[in-house]
Image (cartoon, rainbow, N blue to C red; front, top):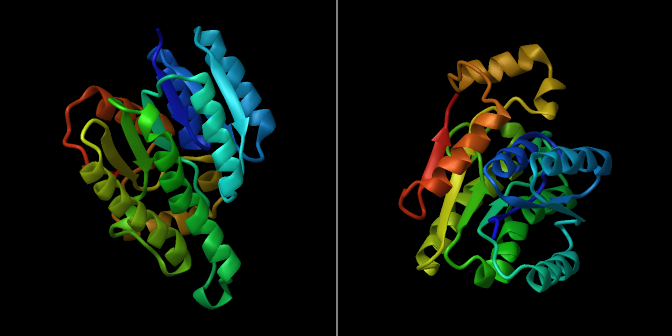
Length: 234
């Protein structure tokens, strides 16, 4: 029986590359998306061309009812999930005095509360498996004034990782924290701003999404202590 990996936010960037690399490693894939149907449909074709299956689910991770329906559907179809990758995230950068409570809460709901709820509702089918929370160095030491809500969510996700590692005896839980990654959103940024930010945090090159995927596979196949925080500096 093939292994199964559930990856949130898999339509683009890091999530897409994780889905592809896990598929190449023999995993059947469960992927979630919110708005990018065309992108995730293309990914499904690529994954299934590798020779594994991919199920895709549209889900608004801000909506607990949708999360509840999704996790019930997963447990009805799958006896076991080998890997859960909490990758989906939003970032709504702006000056602090322009941030609204609604926007701040949206960042927390997607980046922090949704991973908590998914783990809470699925842990009994992940028994013996691995959970990887995609955090960021912004949750440690590369935060900026513009993304205080995003950075707070990623710092909390690191803490959540450590707490769940204490909770579970038979599930390994990790936080993977990359620096600047070469995703679609980064390519749309001002080159001058990106260079300034990379210089500020002493990052020599952008991390490729596939490198993050390789690191995730290393965590699964290795024996690093549960609760470990793995930084990718680039």
